[in-house]
Length: 173
Image (cartoon, rainbow, N blue to C red):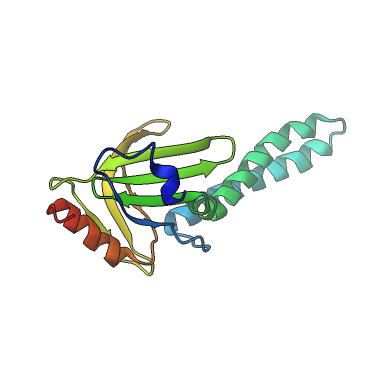
């Protein structure tokens, strides 16, 4: 989004301080490797089952295709899902809020804002491409709820953005 597209989203006195995007290069973490390994096991077992079921004749083996597809998609999403999500994400920091915009196929466009105040807890995650986390969301999986950290992930100019956030918290902007 260009600065011209923001007039309907900003409050009076709110100005854009920084805009950027996360790095879209391929990267895989330990959690991704675990998910991919489970997907490989799932798809592998389905392939084994389909092979054995096909020896009996008929089309019964085709019921394993859904399981094989689920396993293969788990592997694909574990390895490439993060890259895909980051390539469809945009960040904006104003003198009052942080925005995260996404435009994902099948989900559409989403724009979430997070207030930046003196009380906002800000974490700088030091890595090859640092991240700045400034909010949490309660999320639910199948059997549990957990707090997910929200922020500007994998940004090249993280130290500059952190400086802007600290200035906003101190009322310097």
